[in-house]
Structure formats: structure tokens, C-alpha cells
Length: 249
Image: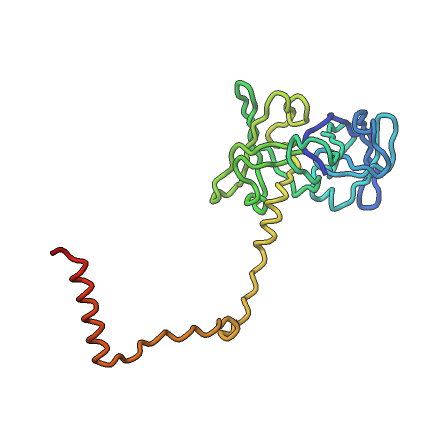
């Protein structure tokens, strides 16, 4: 599990075919400073497992499914990558919960420079667009970012925008992104869970038998017994007497 706060920019130094996948070696002095065999390291948003390492490098296997889903397909030596070690359970969650499980890739459509920031617009695959909301979280190449704008639901090309501060531009590979570049996308895990839940049709409620909900019979309303005419007359006189005694003279 990661937070999307990039710790260093590493460099791919070797790519060796391995079956239908590849074995990747990355120069990563900080990431391997306390890493061990089997540890997880995020490489531009892709969670990889350390299988070998040296003083300033580590090697990981990348399977075909990961290559198909991410920008690591066709990776060559010399590529700069964002690196982050797995977060500690007692550490600060500086970004948001990032699993390192890429949902797909997007294409940078536009880069606009502002006075203190840079706005990057990225095309989003149609099936991922519903999972992206304005002011929500998105991980782009492993960087935790806040979505600053999204496309209307009805447009043909769905997109999102993020606004990058100078620190993000300098500390990650996003500072070198241009229109036409492809980037890894990981949507928010909560949005994915909600989408999955909504994809199931709620089962029809079983027929309910009225008897199962019948409560105890209500007690019969009290009935007024018949009053003999004489008793009724006496009661009426008593009321009249009380009224006369308590009234004004």
C-alpha cells in the first residue's frame, strides 16, 4: 500500500525478457536503502516486488497483465520512473490510499502553464471516467493528485485535469510530461468498490406473508353499559346542582 508521495526519481537500467513478461532493474538509492527481498516498491504507480537488489538498485519481475495495463509495456533502459516504498502502518498518509494496481493508461492532451502551477489535461478511458470526480483523488504515474476539473458526462473524449505545484513538477516525472505522452492511472479505491456494488442487481425481496407481521389483536373498545332512564335523570340533576352551587349568584 502506498500514499502517492514520490520519494525519488529512479532510472530503468536493464530490461530482460522473461517468458511473456520482463525482468526490470531500476537504479533506486533511496528506495533500496532499507528494502529487503519481497518488499514492494511503486514504480511510476505500479506495485512491483523486489527479487534482487544491490546498494543502489533492485530488480523486479513484471508479468504480462501488468505490461498490458500500464506504461511499462515497451519500457527501455534510460526511462525515468517515480519511486515510492510501501507506507508503514504507523506513518502519515500524506496523499491518499494508493494500491499500485493500475486501472489503465491515459494520454496527456494538453499542458498549460500558470503563474505558480501547471495544468495537465489527461484523456480518461470511458470505463474509468465515472470513477473520477472533481476534487477527488487520482494517482497519475504513482503521484497522488487532486482532480481540479473533469469533462461533462456527455462528451466523446472523457478527460480530467490536475494542477501541479512546483514541488510536484520538480520531484516527479510529471514535470517532463508533454501532449501525447501516456501515463498510468489508478482511480480511487472507494469509487471502484461502489461501482462494483452497483453492478449487481439487488435480489427481489421474498414474498412476505401478512400473518408473519400480524401483531397481537387489539383489545376491544370498552362499551358503555345501558343506563336506566331513572339513573340518567339523577345524574343530570347532580350536574345541574353542582353547576348552580359553583356559579355566580
